[in-house]
Image (tube, rainbow, N blue to C red; front, side, top):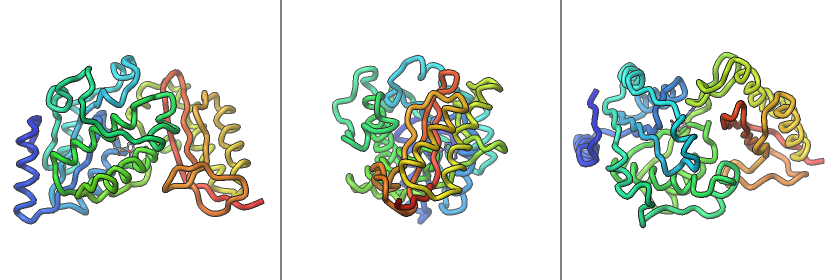
Length: 283
Ligand code: AMP
């Protein structure tokens, strides 16, 4: 496995692969790798010819410096896991290379408007602008590729699809389903910050999603169920919504069909999020 940190070496590696007729697969991550990331590596291994993975804890998508400082970092384990999953090139760009002006913002940046201001973006101004800006830079450096993202971060996936469409990147976005532990908790690098009690409380997320997936009801009734199960589990709810999966516009009561339930909240001060399909019936 080739390991790179230099942007020019990364750009030339990707373009050399394409010149040999190989299809480049890109898996962007923030490290602290787990089975969720592994599922993206596997998908890339199966459907692309050469797999590039990036590890960069992007400070521009953290609003809170203590959240950034406490974000888990496990570089040695990440290297082993990437190697075991058949990653061909592991790229860990430096902060100076990605954001040379940091902590000052770069003058050129991607802004999203409304889509970046709701849900994960509400109360975290600039979060999705930071995500979209870093992903745009990864896409520009890598060039034409397939890029693999998890449905775990559903809003992020929506933002990235929009980014590709609006700015015309030569990138095919491939979405992978959420990987969960045996209890149902969606895998997240942040889960290591939970105590065993916190882990039990966090199971409220998947329990709430299972409830609304099982029984078709009205949008308002599903929202109430989500919130009720989460609060009952002791989660400090940030939001519990039912939305159109393509636009993230909240569903009106009386709409029918398959929508997406988005849930987020705090357990022991750790921000967790999850999502899943939900069936709506008109009243
Ligand atoms: P992160 O390192 O948290 O930025 O995540 C990198 C990529 O892995 C993103 O596309 C995430 O959506 C994806 N991912 C994280 N957790 C999971 C999971 N439990 N299942 C599937 N994909 C995941």
